[in-house]
Image (tube, rainbow, N blue to C red; front, top):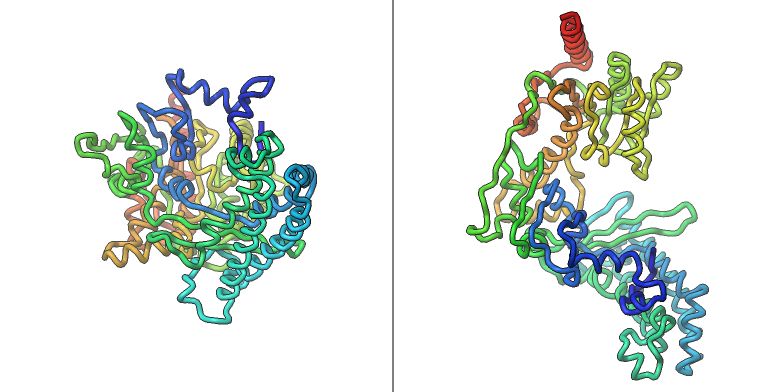
Length: 530
């Protein structure tokens, strides 16, 4: 069941059919012994749900990124346009007209419709200015005092201020006929029924949009936060944009929201930290903010799998991901691996564009051969793809981030994982830039803390797709890494085992792969004859 606007708990509980599906789950919480939730709900857990006494956090490293999303604030043009559409068309327009008649304010609706049109133009005007300031990527927003006159940023500042003022006027008009609080409605002589609630919810929506990050985008009154914006032009000429404010350090917020209240917290992850040391990641989770008396020492348990004998990490020497024609090299390497292994290959990409380029080239190269080429669509669909890959004896699976973890393909179905490059975060990411500047001021190693550590964690997730049982064996090959970079040793030292490492050309790695799997087949034949 979906509810637009604000959910009114009293109204939902008074429905003839009883509480809605959401409320029935909430009502069941006090009697539940075990509750399964995701990280997003954990970090936004409402007080009315009751306390969590004992918490087990799986994939604990994911809380770091989820904290950025949970404690950030975003306003998007798409959401504003949807609210304007509701206000200016039926049935919500009818709701506002009924409310205006109730309180004898027929003069309000023309002003509402005029402001709906004005705000719509303002949304597009801000998008046009932001696109001129931040073409093709998300970028840091400068503070107003640092913006030169007659620049795209100064135009965006003026457009944002005008939009905030018009949103406030629109909220004022709606609240004249639909007061936002039930008490205000009762004093005005309007019963707080469904019609009044719908109008009030719309007014609160516009009021909230006029405040927060949009109003503060250029004033930037929040210390230790990063303000960012992105924009793009749609095919119909309209501009889409989003503005975001995110705390530089979410550790204390994660600690207060998730770790402080429960009597017991256990955090589990197969990929915490660099070189076997989970401390940097634990610090980002607010783990060290727990009193020492409550905090057991962390334990790092060895893997039960024999990675040194069963896994080979190949680093291709020669081309890197920065070189022209890298997608073609990825496709050639993938095709050669697929032919050698008869399928049984997964290729993981850090760039969706590169994924599609390689997939197109691979389809041409393997045309007419009996291989199933499975490509992850933009919407995800990982579970169905994995099922099809496992069922087909001669398949290759190409995907992006949702295939990096949580995918379990044990046995002979998967023998090689190809990775386009080490998964470093985007160097121009606004939050990363803000955090780098802060760490440099403190004299700390920003690269290791903010770029290397998350990249190592993600690569361990990618590497972990290969070995899922004690009998699994195979190769993980990084195609676009520069093996001579000093940080490569950190990636290797952080892997379980560690595996045997082979640094050579792709042709030589393929030869080693052939030898590796021929030995495997001979050994299997010997066991069968015995």
